[in-house]
Every structure is written in structure tokens, then in C-alpha cells.
Image (cartoon, rainbow, N blue to C red; front, side):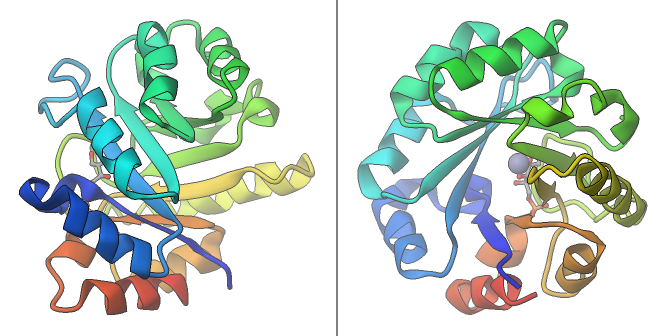
Length: 216
Ligand code: DX5
Ligand code: ZN
């Protein structure tokens, strides 16, 4: 299977951005997953535009930015200018989601919407066809290293059904607690992109772990 692997750099060593990028460049990971947190939408602050720019300097791979920020609309152009290829915003953080999606796409970036564990798939019904990706959170956003929520499998299956019924090619990304043990079940349920932070960076051989996830 051609699963997209997107290591979450939240768990990397930020004093070594160049080396961390080089490792991912050599690996089978297609995307760099960058978790931007504002301390408002989620109870944590991570990093912002300068760090995205720094990774952009060291890779030609896709920069997949997961914006865990309230009202992302004002920063869409800035994310684009920093080198973002795919911008994912949270359903729960956007009052005018349809407008936000159109604005992201008008810059040339791909548009994703993330759903928190409590947010049902059905709420995306009217915008699904406009999306390049749906990110299903399998933990509550804000931190790396949390345990995977088992109800995620059903959610992935339900989303896959919706996408197939509408003949769409929307990417289904799963983020949070993904590891070499649950990856194949997620892919079997319909996931097409896997985000993994601690599973990659806490493993003895990150490149090997990426390869296992890639073949899940
Ligand atoms: C959590 C972030 C994730 C996180 C995943 O809010 O969106 O991308 O870094 O980390 P792990 O894989 O350790 O759960
Ligand atoms: Zn993320």
C-alpha cells in the first residue's frame, strides 16, 4: 500500500533542524508534519512561522502544517509565504469554515480540515468535496506522546465510506498515538496518511520505523 508517512517534527530536536531535515530527506517519509499551537485553541504553545521557514530551507518534501490555532484566517498568506504546501485548520476553530477553505485554496496550498475526537464526521458533509484532506485526531490535540483513542477506527471507516460514496479522492490522515502496532489496522480502515511523532523520534532507528509505517 502507498501510505503517506508524515513524521511530526514536534518530537524532534529543534537545536538540530538541519540534521533532522536531512534524516527525513533520506527516509521514505513523503511529508514533514509541522504542529503549530497557539496556547489558545490548545493548552500548549509549540512554534510558528520562523520554524516552518527553517524547515523549508532544508527540504523539498511536502510541508504539511497542522494549525492548532483559533481563527487561522489572518495567517493563511503567512503560512503560504513560509513555504507551507498543505494547510490543515481545525473544524472547531473556524466559524466560517467554508470561507477559510476557499481562502487556503486561493493561495495555491492544499486544504485540510482536522476533527477533534469529539467532532463527528457528519459535520463535514457540506464541505467534503472542497477538501484535499481530512485529519482525524486520534488524541486530543496539544501534545505528543498521548495514547491512541480506539474509537478512531470507526471514524476512519465512516469517513472512507463518505468519500467513496461521493467518488472523491480526499486524503484521510490520522494523527495522535500512531505507531507500528496500530498502523496496519488504520490503513485497513481507510487511512491514507499517517502522522507519527514519538513512535518515530523515540525509536532506536527512526528511518526504519518510517519504513515500517510506510508499508503498513
Ligand atoms: C498533537 C499533534 C500531533 C503530535 C503527534 O496535537 O497534532 O501531530 O505531534 O505526536 P504522537 O505521534 O507522539 O502522538
Ligand atoms: Zn499534528
